[in-house]
Amino acid sequence: MSLSFAVQPNPNPATPERVAEIHANPGFGKYFTDHMAVATWTKGQGWHDDVIVPYGPLQMDPASAVFHYAQEIFEGLKAYRHADGSVWLFRPERNAARLNQSAHRLCLPELPVEDFLTSVTELVRVDERWVPSADGGEQSLYIRPFMMAHENFLGVRAAETVLYCVILSPVGTYFAEGVRPIDIWITHDYSRAGIGGTGAAKCGGNYASSLIAQYEGYENGCSQVLFVQPCVDRVDELGGMNVFVVSRDGALITPATEGTILHGVTRDSILQVGRAMGLDVQERRLPPEELEEGITSGRFVEAFCCGTAAVISPIASFKSKHGAYSLPPGSGSITMKLRDAITDIQFGRAEDTFGWMHRIV
Ligand code: COI
Image (cartoon, rainbow, N blue to C red; front, side, top):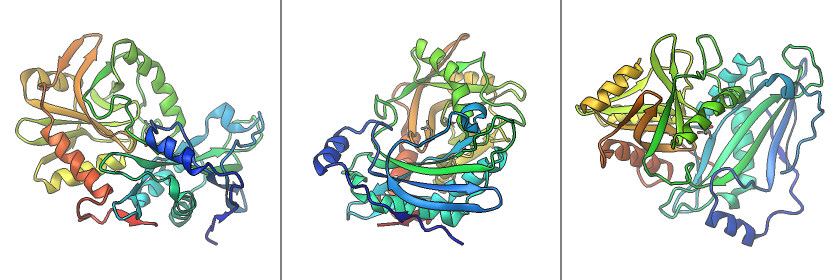
């Protein structure tokens, strides 16, 4: 039977003044709405106890397996308010499908696509007033579904009780500096994911293991870190985003996923929009040596990173312990064209010729 996520309303919701104050300067992932969706899965019984409840701490036993073995996955998508006040989701079925791919890899139960969509839709409807008005800007309501082992047991095996939860956070741009070009640190000392590992799954462990290199990047003045896949000699992905380069002759290149790179929804959307714009779209191995040679020779004229949170952020330069190389200053016209094409669809400023948007309010 399908889940319905009945609502238990929050008796103490945030005041309209507080919501307006948060909308005036949301930052990224700092504030949360009045409600959250939860559901439990038990081996032999399936999903049950699906409900929308007041947002608040989860009660977890210290022996809960997720604290010890990191059996956890998550998703990220956004709700956008259009100028007429309506609220829309962008390709939510892709997140539902990816959650299940991640679930498979982490030995967690699948959540039927329909139940994922109900959890997200019903929660956003309940907290609709938290969806910022875009006003020509970039604000939206970030949706974070996640699933974790919730069984109190210290043996190493797949948990037989699992918790699914969805929380919401009004957000502006991911990077504090806004949509300005950022510098990227290429780490040669740490890798994000190996062949046969969890690189294609959206699991917390991938992000935890990226942090040490991320801090190496900060120490070198960079905003994000780019990992290299040593076994196949190609750049992989950033700590939390996919990477693209644009060549002088109109090629749009991104590393092929090959089992170690996350199948980004924004990545896929860029590939589709790029094809529709007539760009020569290439998903292939991009060795770090080619990245350097392409930029220093002037063959690669733009680079950007992308993800649901960051949308598309132009890259100014790449640095590593072997040196630094910069994209030509002032370049980025294709990057911004792709960015505008996608955000215009998301915010209802352009016709959705791809059929990506789902109206929920
Ligand atoms: C997203 O883009 O939604 C992510 O999950 C990545 C994270 C850096 C926020």
